[in-house]
Image 1 (cartoon, rainbow, N blue to C red):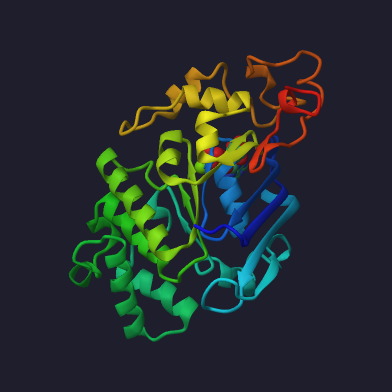
Image 2: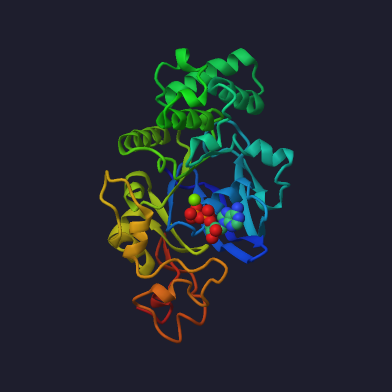
Length: 346
Ligand SMILES: Nc1ncnc2c1ncn2[C@@H]1O[C@H](COP(=O)(O)OP(=O)(O)O)[C@@H](O)[C@H]1O
Ligand SMILES: [Mg+2]
C-alpha cells in the first residue's frame, strides 16, 4: 500500500479524567501519524490508553474525561474519487464534539468497530434498520437504496444470506455475526479510517480467525486505513504494517512490524514480545501481565521520568527516574522513547 498521504496526525495528545479520587492522565502526550491505506497496530497492556486514543480521535471521550492538550488533525479528502485529490486540514481537537462537522466525520470518514458489538448495536432495532439508518444519515439516499446497500455491505462482511437475514435482531445472532454486522455498518460509508478496538477479543478462536481474515481482505479491497487496537502482538503480526507500542498514556516505540518483532528497542516492547501468546490460542491479559515484571502502576500516580522505569530491567538509576526520555528516531520510521538510545546512548 502506497503510504504517501497523511490521513491523521496525533501530536502531543493529552486526555485526562478528572475524578474525585484524583486526575487520571490517560493520555499524557501521544504522538503518531496514520497514512492513507495504512494498517497500523496499537498495542500495550490493558489500561495503557489504547481505547482513550480511539475515543479521542472520534471525539467521544466520556465524562469526566477531556482532551486537555495537543492536536488531532484529519486530512480530509475533498474529491470523492481517487488519490492525489485535494484535501483540507481539519483540527478535530478544535471542533465541537457534538457539532455537525464532527458528526459528519464519525461513522462516515472514521468508523469504529468496538470490542463488544452490542456497544454499537441497539437491541430494539433490526440490524438492517440500523445499517440503513447510518447509510441514509451520511449519504442522503432513500430508504430502499439504503436497504439494498445494507444487504451489499452485509454480504461484503461475510454475513451469510444477507437478503433473508437482514431483518434479524441482534439477539438472534451469534457474537461473530453481530461483529460482522457492525463491520458492515462501519464500512457502509466508505470510511478513510476504520478503528477496530480489540474487535475479536470477545469471540472464540475460530471466529476470531475468520474476522481477522475478513478485515485483511476488506482492507486490500477497499484500501482504507485501519487502526487496529489489540493487546495481542500475535494479532498485530498478522494484521499490521506498522506498530505503535503504548505504555501508560504514551507511545514508547513505533516501527514497521518486522522491526518490532526482529529489532525491538524499548525494554517494554522487548518484554511484551517475550510474553506473546502462541498463535491460535486465546490470549489472557493476566498472563501477559505476569510475565512482565511488576504490574502497571496506579493510573493516578504515573512514575516520574520514564513511566516504565520501576519495571525495567535495564534502568539506569538517577537517570530513568528523573527526566522523561526524548522520542528518538533510531532508523527511518523507527522511533523509541528510551535513554538507552539517546544522543549519548548505544
Ligand atoms: N470513563 C473513564 N473514567 C475514568 N477513567 C477512565 C475512563 N476510561 C478510561 N479511563 C482510564 O484511562 C486509562 C486508559 O484506559 P483505556 O484507554 O481504556 O485503556 P486500554 O489501553 O485498555 O484501552 C486507564 O487508566 C483507565 O482507567
Ligand atoms: Mg481498551
